[in-house]
Image (cartoon, rainbow, N blue to C red; front, side):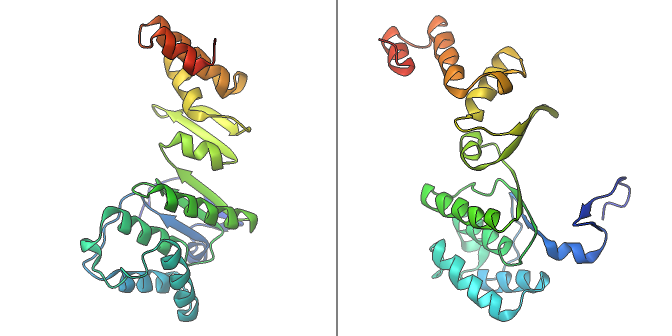
Length: 220
C-alpha cells in the first residue's frame, strides 16, 4: 500500500515486495480489529492466508489453545471475548506460520503473569531455532529480562542501542536518563547504582523518609 516510500527491505536476500517474503514474516499487532466471527473461524482463515496446511493448523490450535487455556472459548464470537482472551487469539495467529522474522507490538498487554511466562517460554523456543524476534514495548522491566539487544527511543531519538548485560535494568536506566539527560548512563552504570542514585535523590527531595531510604538502599 505504501508506494511512495524509498529504500529497500530484504528478507533473507529477497525484496519485501516479493510476495514470497510474506510467508516468512509473522506479525502480532497491539490492537486488533476483529470481524464478527468466531475465534475458530478467524484463526483458520489467518492460517490459510499464511499457507498453513490444515493438519498443521489443527495441531498448533490444540497446542496453543491448551497452553493459553482458551481451548473452551474458540467457538465464542471475537467481539464477545474479554481483552485478555482476544490478545491470546492474536498471539495464536502469529505462531501458525513457520516464519523467519516475528514482529510483535506490545504482545503481553492484557495478559496475566502466568500467560506472560508461557509466552516468553515459547519465544525462547523460537530463538533456539534461530528465529529473529522484534518486540516493541513500553514494559522495560519485562523486556530487560528476555531481550538480547535493545533500542531505547525517547521523543523519536535513539538514546541507547546495544546488547543487554545481566542485571541491566532498562527501567532504572531510562528513569535516570530522564532525570539528567545523560545518554551515557546506559553504558556506564549498572542498574543497582542507578537505583541507589534515584533513592538518594528522592530522599533529598523529601519523597522518602530516612527509614524508607535506608530500607530501599540497603543502608544501615
